[in-house]
Length: 271
Length: 242
Image (tube, rainbow over all chains, first blue to last red; front, side, top):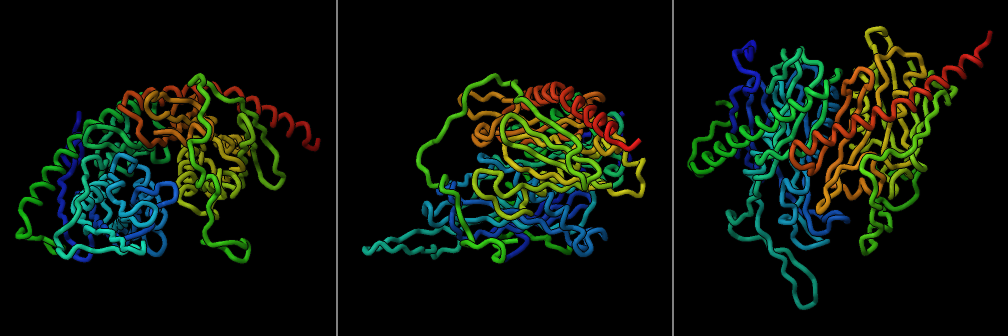
């Protein structure tokens, strides 16, 4: 009948709140609230050495911290396994075409930008993967990397010069950054954006990572149960459809927020 | 555990010489996209484990699993298994594969029948090149009740200009792949126990086609593992004290 406990349809998301530039010491940050799930992502751009097999590219590193306040299960080291699983998934969904890594190169084989993406789980209210991927995309959109120049003098020694203007920055294009859509199998149907109660009823879910153009970059089955091959094909199509809509809304929110400029009223943590 | 200097005498960071080699190296040989390499499997090898299995597929890339009476999966690669000498165990890839293994085995095991038991499955990859099917065979070897055997198959998609999905890729094909997919199927129940794929796989129809190819591959492998399981049971029956 396409009706869930909270009145949503099977393909409806809960109300999403996104705010960028919430942490001042980062190169980019974002906070996403999806129902009771609260995620904070900070991106720091630091200079590093390119990896040996990719001398002309910079790189991204993901770290996920499940704080004990999110849910009592994360007390002590309880959240580490989940944190590693989420970080591994983030590494998997980002592929060559997601972010232009060559633009992060400063001088081949010597210097490049390394973007450290730190995800903090503040509150756990179901559907973590989707919320985290939205927050990561928003934080990368908000990231400003300072422009640097490599100066070479007569003796051949190189020096790196940072631009004097603090607003002279490179902005990353997040057009191809994917978002995750988790589809939980409950009975014979599947639902998008499950709450904690719905997740408890679901034995297996399919996690699909989709870009704004509808290209699937990753898929993974999660959970203790098994899935019917036909359901997987259906869930894949739903994931692609829902993903495209999600990207469109996210893009419009982010552009609207950016257009308000530096004078916009920030809600921050107490709003 | 970065650089354990008591065991490993050498520089902190080292690289295999192949990384410095110029040029493309070998190119993968064109082949039938749906071919499966011959598989050799044997159960009941380790005396100290309740159940065990050894699997070799098309060349020296074996894998081995052991079971001791909750389903916990541990996956390790031997340091010499890949192209270069890998970092000490505990890397993120191993955690990910252990988790994938656990999620694929859980639907098959009747954990409800063992309410207070903890089942530990550990897999050791001795040589790289593909499959990791030994674990479900080890489970069957112990006599743990399962709904079905779980069979896994991997595929990789060659990069453009000829993006085709290849079943059971060799190490070379996997390295050059634009996308990869691993499926785990319970052939009799026709249920998918595990699925993990990433990369530039193209449109959803392409991913669906790859999954179908993978499921077919699993169905083709089933008789081999079934026979191996039966043979191991006969061997155990013959050697049991009367």
